[in-house]
Amino acid sequence: MSRFYDIVSNPARIMGNSLPSAPPARLESSTRIIRLDSNENPFGPSPKAIDALQNGISSVNCYPDDDCGLLRQKLAKHHELPADQVLVTAGSTAMLSLLCQTLLAPGLNAVTSECSFIVYSMAVQAAGARLIEVPMREDKLDLEAILAAIDTNTRMVLLANPNNPTGTMLEADEVQRFQALLPAHVVLILDEAYYEFAQHFASLRRITYSNSLEYVRLGASVVVLRTFSKAHGLAGLRVGYGIGPAELLGYCARMRNTFSVASVAQAAAMAAIDDTDHIQHVVENNFLQARVLTQGLSALGYRVAPPAANFLFCGLGEDAAAVALFLREEGVAVKPLGSWGAPNFIRVTIGTPEQNQAFLRAMRTLSARRTATETRVSRLG
Image 1 (cartoon, rainbow, N blue to C red):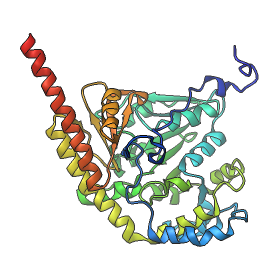
Image 2 (cartoon, rainbow, N blue to C red; image 1 turned 90 degrees about the vertical axis):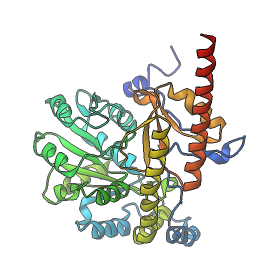
Image 3 (cartoon, helix red, strand yellow; image 1 turned 90 degrees about the horizontal axis):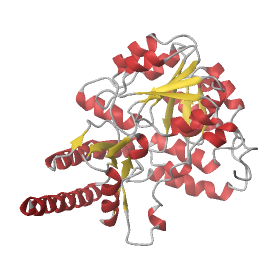
């Protein structure tokens, strides 16, 4: 028995260790690693956001606006909603944690899918509640199974759309039918961290991705999570927000840490909203390079789920951890998904054209080595 085991909280005892990603490239002791493991924007932030950061450095001796008032007002105008239906937090994961702290407690539960965002389990368990995970169906969230798993102790349903790590999308009519069937005691959390990418994919495929803000406008028990970490390229600044019923967000705000969003982060986010040209460049590259990677991996015999975000879910047919280790030796980092319950899959961030070609070269090298090994074994047999 360890020294503090008997005095820490039960959630702290039962939660597993967090799973750190690979070290940032600047900490690598060997050659430079191409980071395709964390769904980061390979083009970085908008030049307008960088200017806002530089202009704000001289005032960091002052505490930030605790309410993120200017940013909230700007987001409210951007989404055509009242400001009290927007709550800014230190990343959308912080908003998720606030919702769990506000809605959950021991004896209660939340429902989601297996092979979904790994932070859901951490946030729910930290609130002392239980996370119910239902199996997927053909790499997509099984909404019927999620509905069937809801009971009287359920307080929230978590839908990542697009889902992380599979990258698959639920269309708007699917979500609408699902939302209409939820009981009154359940809040639907629509995690749209990859909204800009999904919207671009959907428009080119001539389908409707999301009507999530309409649910909020109609007063439904729905909270939408958005972030500046992905398409806007501000992952290192930690800025996200929730959009939902004013009363519920008011309760969540009571649980928020003081001064949790830095002043320079608020300024950069406000500038990033305005740079639509930068966002368009990012999502267009993402769509074109998703096609390049999908075709390249498919030609090697790998299975790739239809993408709707800035990453690919790739089935290898072998141990993903070993493949990820080989790729790292080749200078490319990807995410093996054993801890997500998918030990033969990797998640690959869609990078720049040059980064993606480096990844495909490494995969071709792997495939060639495998073929050579199989040939030698066959001759020996």
